[in-house]
Length: 171
Image 1 (cartoon, helix red, strand yellow):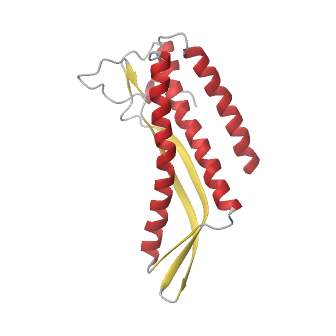
Image 2 (spheres, helix red, strand yellow):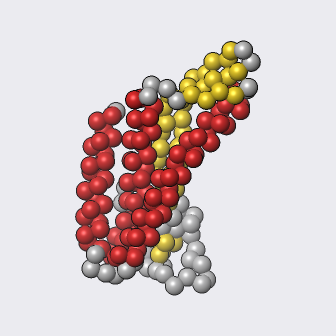
Image 3 (cartoon, helix red, strand yellow):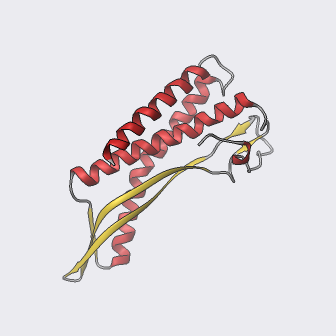
């Protein structure tokens, strides 16, 4: 949902020259089935749930009543949501189109760790894309003070609508 002043619980660093920072993160949970055969455990990934979060403990806003600043920070949260939707679609398609996503290891614990590493590694690309989009957004909008702010927000909202529709088609 939309950001509020309550989403900014962190403290600004002493050396900060900015007015706010929105820290985001992608997290996932997953379900799998497994089979043990010949001293090997094979996990089959059945589903992944990916969500985007605002890290309230790391996010801060020195002007919580500034609606323009809050709107700019919403753009950073929306970049994370865009990457979340892209990740959901990509991983869903990998699981359902290839019909299998398996890992094998000697024990259940090792196989689960291997699967979690694969998923973490996949999400790193989306997190990196989000960081790059955040930097470009700040550069092009001059941290919300430039003329491109409105256009960026319009494109973000349209992108979210399109990706949400794509995601809903897969459910």
